[in-house]
Image (cartoon, rainbow, N blue to C red):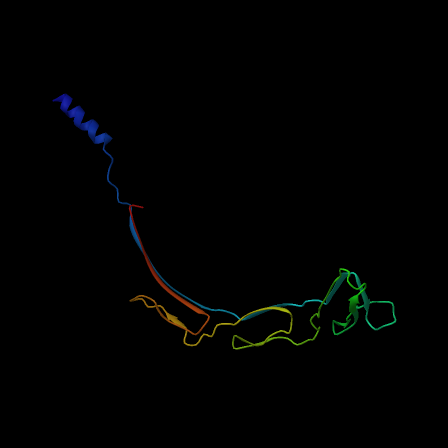
Length: 171
């Protein structure tokens, strides 16, 4: 009997007690509404001129000794004098290339944004423009009795409604 009692008491000491510390729950509702903003980024391009050739005679009609190229600038745009080329020796090989890129004016014309829309674009050679969103009927509501409700807006809008439930047992 003593052995049985000793065995039973040792099993009682080894067996862990079941413990329920707490049970918790958390309910979270959220609504996120976003309207994209209008944006415009412009980079002014400069003036450039290049000429190359061989086996040609050139002239630009001036007596200044300078053959072709960029001249003085007005509002950031250089004047340009073109070259006339002709084959130097009849029957011989020749090549001639001339290119000119007119730069953007330093004009003070700027863009205007009205109600999230870009009304006028900048007058530059490299321009990226994004139209803004229009809220329209964009809306979201939270309720203690149900799932959040959202109403779609116009172009360039986002509406997200979310309900999450967290349940923790034996924390």
